[in-house]
Amino acid sequence: MIISDINERAVAVGEFVAASGATVRAAAKRFGISKSTVHKDLTGRLKKADPMLFKRVAAVLAKNRAERHLRGGNATRLKYKKAEPS
Image (cartoon, rainbow, N blue to C red; front, side, top):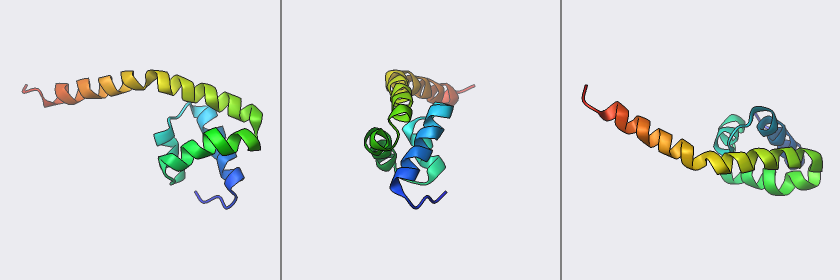
């Protein structure tokens, strides 16, 4: 998905994250841009482009940040569970 205007892209990524609760990594993959660009769009550009959407996205980012250690632990648990001899 190619969006020419930076602010349009920031709003599009913000709407996707707000609607789906997606992580920065998932949004980057969906839009074909880097995680750094997604983070910059969501924390910097979106605040100026659409302040109300920024508040909704900030809540999703905070939730994801609070849960990331759980996702990592679960991924490690599944990795070693898969590697166990049957």
